[in-house]
Image 1: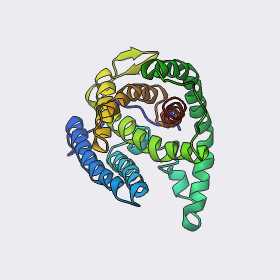
Image 2: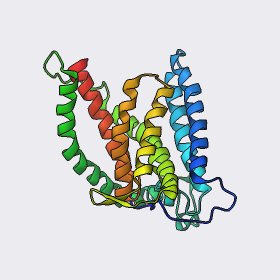
Image 3: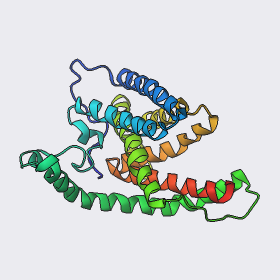
Image 4: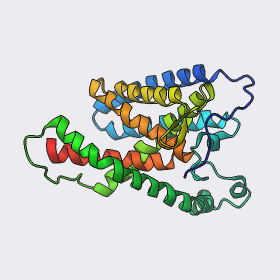
Length: 264
């Protein structure tokens, strides 16, 4: 699920909007849609549907815009080794009932990449998470010792963070947005062994943080700017969003455990 695309590759623009204007127009539409769908969270019985709809909006916007680009989702780093965007070889073979053969082949083909990206995410988590836990404690100064209070269904919660949060958010912001912004400002700086576009890295993280205000206007939500920078670096490092998806989900699971254990 990594090394799918390299941002900053130049292609003829034709009749397409300039990258920066395009990104801002798409972002504005996503923010409006997110705010409208987020309002449904307060309607009884529609909270889950609201979350699902926002996830679909993010992923749908990223995929639709990526398919308009030369190189498509692969250049954006969001084809996930053919899992989201089948390869031509897969397309030429019988799809099977309801496309199950295609899905099985895509999953099998993506497994080696998924293992590599998961390994990278776990390695980075081993470095980043311990100081994060210390910083969380220092910032909140909990009044009681940590207690294990896991979500009722940890596996289901982790899966939802992977599929319904990590995947759509990474596809939109680190896949589509960061790639198109790097078309404007090519990667010219070396950061921790990786060539990055500093303006693209920062601006995608700013947009990522601000969109969270569309569903909950709280300044605390802007703190996601900082992990947004790390997710963006991971996208540049790995050439795709696979590792960032896994790390994003792990980060959310850890944050939930810390909130429950110290602040709950």
